[in-house]
Each structure stands twice: as C-alpha cells, then as structure tokens.
Image 1 (cartoon, helix red, strand yellow):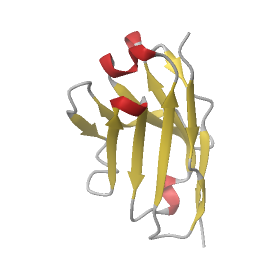
Image 2 (cartoon, helix red, strand yellow; image 1 turned 180 degrees about the horizontal axis):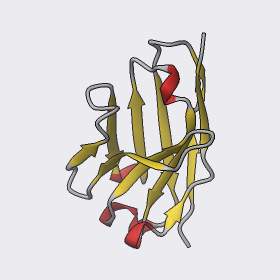
Image 3 (cartoon, helix red, strand yellow; image 1 turned 90 degrees about the vertical axis):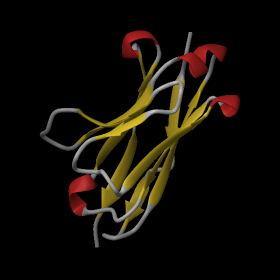
Image 4 (tube, helix red, strand yellow; image 1 turned 45 degrees about the vertical axis):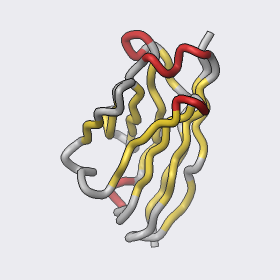
Length: 114
C-alpha cells in the first residue's frame, strides 16, 4: 500500500517562502501524476498544482508565477516551492497521487500571517 507523508508546513510572514515535501512509499510512485491540493477553513479542497510522470506541470491561476511543483522520482518525493506567500494561501496542504488519485497524505498546515 502507498503512503504519502507531507512535511514542511509552518507559519510564515506575508511575502515569505516555504517548501513542502511529500515522500511516497512504494516503487510505483514514478508512474503517476502527483498533485498538491489545499483546503482553507470553510472552503472546499482545491487543486493547487500537478505534475505528470514526464514532468509536465499545471497550476491554479491563483498560484501561477509564485508556486513551483517538482518531483524527484529517485527519491519518491514531490515538492511544492511556495514564494510570495499571502494570507489567502493559508490552508492545510495535501499531497495526492496514485491510480486515479487514490492516495492522500495527512496534510500539513501552512499559515501566512504577520
């Protein structure tokens, strides 16, 4: 069974940066699209960024130019580099992947506040 474990969340001031990591167990990691989602209090979970097994990326309009998703298949890890963070980016961030997006991590809290 695949496990996804996120890390790297925390409290940051507006304009700051964080890098999230998602470590996946299981050798099948490299063949699937991986994605980051987020859910803010009182809002629905939304797709933030995704990366295919070939490295093609896509982003929500709200984070384009500020966030970068990447993956290291040798380490079974996907990253989300977040720059120019704003209070609206405050949310629990979840890693997702596997066949038909079957697997979810437990989430990591990102809080942007002065």
